[in-house]
Amino acid sequence: MDMQSNPGDAAGTQAVQETPEALVARLAKDGRAAQRVLARLSPDRKAQALRAAAAALRSAHGDILAANAQDIAAGQAKGLSAALLDRLRLDEVRLQGIADALEQVAALPDPVGEVISAAERPNGLRLSRVRIPIGLIGIIYESRPNVTADAAALCLRSGNAVLLRGGSEALHSNHAIHAALVAGLESEGIPAAAIQLVPTQDRAVVGAMLTAAGLIDMIVPRGGKSLVARVQADARVPVLAHLDGICHTYIHAAADPEMARNLALNAKMRRTGICGAMETLLLDTQFPASEAVVAALLDAGCELRGDARAQALDPRIGTASDEDWDTEYLDAVLSVAVVDGIEPALEHIAAHSSHHTDAIVTADGEAAERFLDEVDSAIVMVNASSQFADGGEFGLGAEIGIATGRLHARGPVALEGLTTYKWQVRGSGQARP
Image 1 (cartoon, helix red, strand yellow):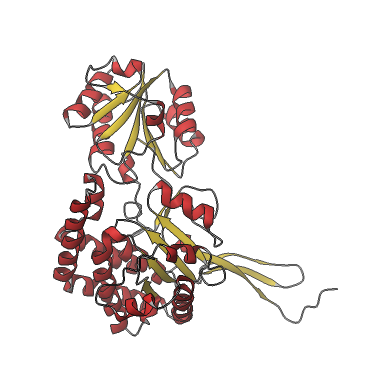
Image 2: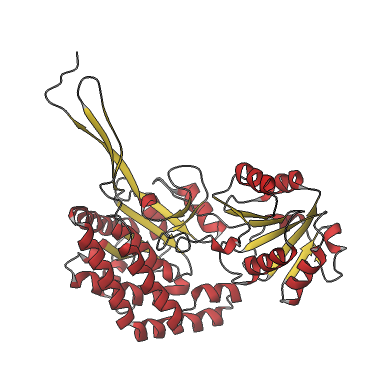
């Protein structure tokens, strides 16, 4: 077994001596005990703990950046793509953003205890549905070290304990961030087991987490299609899936040419390695400035692969294969198709979208409303860049991921998506006849 342990952590040595199932059971037991403590904390106590964790992150910035430099060097040696290295890389600005996100989550309203609905029955019983934490949440993620902090913050604020299993690419970064978070929480009297990081990279531990029904209450995978597919296939624990982002932008006939150009450039080229990046551009045959839009993308260094009509717009556009329409590039590569109006655009999106984020650019209000109504994606946009598909941009402070399914939570999953509810019934001696 590949038992790479936590750098400098005695728990890693203990993990080597345990089976994956025993390790997960031990961590889950500790996490569930910590969660019972979290469930009793006031909103102010949880908020103060997050502020202390943010301060600890800032104090440990030198150690975290040094650890990240180790991961970047290892990633370069392994030949990771530029997009994956960008996901992995931390600097002072990004680290400050991670700490800021913790404070933003601390400032959000606490969802726990919210009364969703209330009613009184004719027999005098008073019923209410009240938000409660889910319990112990397992997060399985790949190369983004910021997920360590984002997941910890959202889970703690919503009263959940969390068991984190990060990818090997961000091994040192994750452990450095986790150590700072725990130091901040413990300074406020919060149990360290409220936020646990699996102390080994043994792949069998993932399997043990997926089958830990009764110990882990929900699994959230964050990563590529292969990871999510494995989680969905093997899990015996409920899964909140974050699938790939095959995001479309449709430039309608009535789109403003300058807006269309600017949004296409931003949606693709601002950061090509994020799940909200545009991967397919649909151009209406009646849009008058298609050549200018594709030229701007090509001049910005984006490779375009198109159908025959798209290729006729610019000789630099290559030929798109059938696979291109279903590919999340996470790179400066874009598929382009020309469509004969909104109906074929909607059909193309229905056939190829991953139901993450899709957008229309148009000045036609009727077309915009039809797009909003008929596109079945977690996020549907009008006249905005798909790169806004982000919990922070939605005012949620941070996010666990973008849920693309139809159950429980959809779109950016933040505090509310990490709660469930229970019924509370208050009577005055009623017995059922």
